[in-house]
Length: 247
Image 1 (spheres, rainbow, N blue to C red):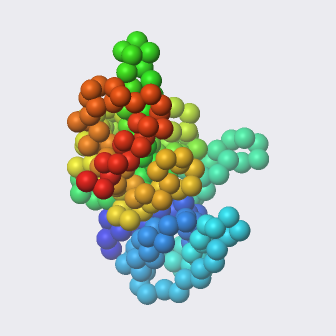
Image 2 (tube, rainbow, N blue to C red):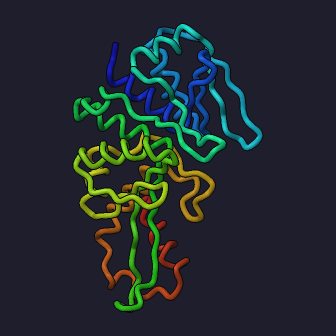
Image 3 (cartoon, one colour):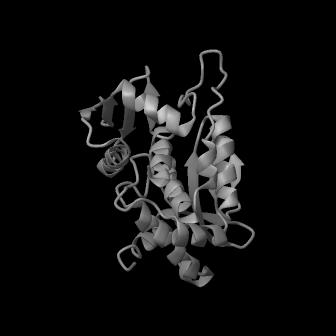
């Protein structure tokens, strides 16, 4: 039994998936790459199994496995009583926490686990804002993981911090903004290759997350003199976008 594959599958289920009715493993995501990851690690752990797939009205794909035996085995292996993350009707959240073994994964396996959850429920942004005091444009870079469940978010935060990052929490988001964190994330974690940015991004929709991550690193080379000629934010963003193809 691969602890790494088990950890990755748990990461997928605790971000864009769920375990339902003691017999369903379900994964929702718009990226076929992420569905391939889900199927791959289920098959690694439980053998060649049958999946059903369908598309929801909003374009999100749903991959489902139906097996009481596999769900029971997963709960036993992970020593988890629930995979539920969603808030209850009374406003409380289930006390969903990561299995203890995940916290003791090797560094290379932990890197894969972090890559999985950031690829599923994470984002990368590179943007610009006008800094009045310095009278210049400022480039902002942000890697972010969104988690609504406060118990699970605390566990994610601790894993990220223990990996060597200096995250901050704002509402539902765990954010990496320091230069050292962006560089560490690029060198040690990254996103799963070919996972793209979704439709809620104004400037980077459709780009690979790793492309924009590499742009974030490249942008550390840009100084005030590189941006002084621009009058509008759209011009700065166009300048940034022009450097993606050179990476």
